[in-house]
Length: 339
Image 1 (cartoon, rainbow, N blue to C red):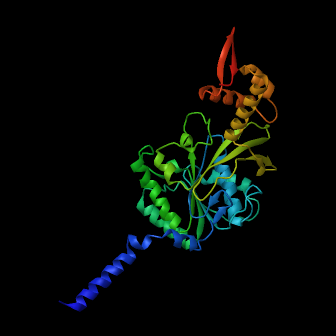
Image 2: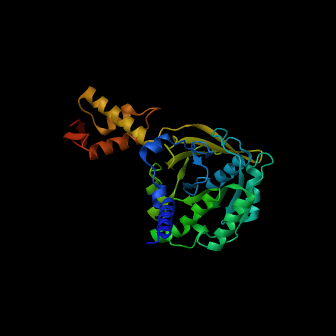
Image 3: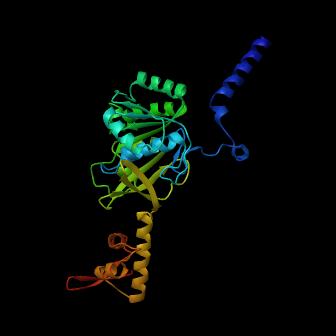
């Protein structure tokens, strides 16, 4: 028996175990004692650094303008919309939809001081092209880009976005870009169907559900009616892998002496919370009155803090869930009560 050989084989086995899956296992007690770094934010409470993040919305949601505002803020490390802290880093904007002329026009309207941002226009960049990704990885490392924006995701690949296996062919390379040091923040368009539920990312996103699974963070932008001089947007943070999503908030966009201005206005109550409050108010009203009907509920409960549409949605959901029942019919009027 060759003792030296046996010892050598044992050492090799130990080395293999220390570099294989066994080395990746962390016991619960050890985990609790580990000092792990806090989340590093590119945009505080919204977008972590070195992640795959997305801005999604309908065509009128000013998505490209918002991304330019993000470029301006992050390149200088100043608060986004005057509200959310940012981490200063170098920025690359890959625009596969607009010419340099259009980018220049918009950037002149958005930039405030001497912000420095690098742009790439209609260069034919593709995430599913390994040579393109290799070159971008090198650029990220050499130029220390902490933020890479892609406008838009759909034109940055040639794969079938409805096929999960093909989706991974253009989302997996993004993880390589993250490891190189960049947050990849993409613009994506919502489905052609009406944008009814901005709190449900799965209902909004075009393409395979694999895209949703690969995302680290996402914000949905929906336009709201404003004056002819101001555009209003509600920003819905709808996914954040690293913690709880921020509450929806409203911003205003307006032009002032040739400059495009972006202002944080207020935190907005989510649709889900508003509907739950309406349901509570409906129950209390019927408990007090004994019975009611839809027209009376919407008329009596409608006010500054509760919109008619929210009340109507709450009534419909309560009927569907048997929390409201028809106790009798008077002509065309259905009298409602609690079960």
